[in-house]
Amino acid sequence: MFEDLSAKLESVFKRIRGEARITEDNVADALRDVRRALLDADVNLNVARDFIQRVQKISIGMDVLRSIAPAQQIVKIINDELIALMGGSAAELHFASTPPTVIMIAGLQGSGKTTFSAKLARYLKSKGKNPELIAADIYRPAAVEQLKTLGKQIEVPVFNREGASALENAVEGIKDARQNAKDVVIIDTAGRLAIDEQMMQEVATIKERVSPTEILFVVDSMTGQDAVNTAKAFHDRLDFDGVVLTKLDGDTRGGAALSIRSVVEKPIKFVSTGEKLDALEPFYPDRMASRILGMGDVVTLVEKAQEQYDEEAAEKLEKKLRKNQFTLDDFLDQLQQIKKMGSLGDLLSMIPGVGSAARNLKVDDKAFVRIECIIQSMTKEERANPRIINGSRRKRIAAGSGTTIQDVNKMLKQFEDMQRMMKNMSSGKMRQLAQQFKMTGKMN
Image: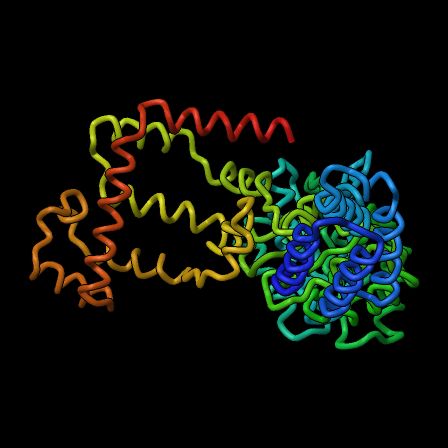
């Protein structure tokens, strides 16, 4: 996500910093390149033009050009304007004063509405809510079954009455949720391959009858400017409350994320960053701007670590470390915890100063799978005491895991390095790290 845009902006900033003196002319040259980078990222033409005009107006102010570090000032101005362009601050969901809160999901077919509905239910459930899903997409083949399958995975009930219309399902589903003391209802409405009057009329009728607390418009960010045009058409008819960008983990240039807020004047509330049901994040304009400019995103990285942190498991591991009993099973557990946080490339890009380097690294997430296969091909005794793994055992492990002896040797070397690092850790280090995570979470 945003890789090309980030690389181009980084090149522009590097050139500005290399100038002996910042003038109106070289600022204009730099912003011309920024404008080109935005257009290449599929940012709306009018949005890109207005953005550059605002940055230029502030940048050529005498206070900026005469400051001690004008280049850094200009980067800061661009950062601030990017944040403003994407909404300024995070926009939270609104909840009804009298339950249930009704959240209506709209969008074109293929945008990821059904999967997002389940992701949102899971997210709200993790925040202490008691959600119910309503399958109101009765046209797309297997749409109802898909939602039921997803609901079963996250243990959230799905309402659908066979043979009922979309409107009937929505109305009756809300009654069912109220009777079962559900405090949030999520309605997955139908979409089409393109905007048509029948679809628009149906979602408008559902809106009128159920009076949703929130209407969220789901858009495939990989469609670029088409996503912005579609959002405007839906907004003109529905006046939705917020936007959800899906497939931000794909080959997207980022134009939709940078344009949609300005065009429809509604906030981006969530972004979907993967296919898994936990791959959903609230949208924070400041964090996204920081990622685009290669400044990392430490807060999100810490939050991901917090989600996977298990205090009881950490205490058990700490006791093992004190006794120098860190085994391959423990090594496997730690790798699986990291894997749950997301792809290595995404995690590296969140570390300040590593973003540009991460783009040049070919991070192989499949390496985790190889390591898991190798360790799982070992006997219990071998996992507890890797020193007994001789040549014949290595050959057997490689054959059992579908890898090579060289892969097994490399994994064992990685384990020895990690074991050595763990041995050098002071006894209270992990608890101290956990406390830092907790404090960071409270501060943000």
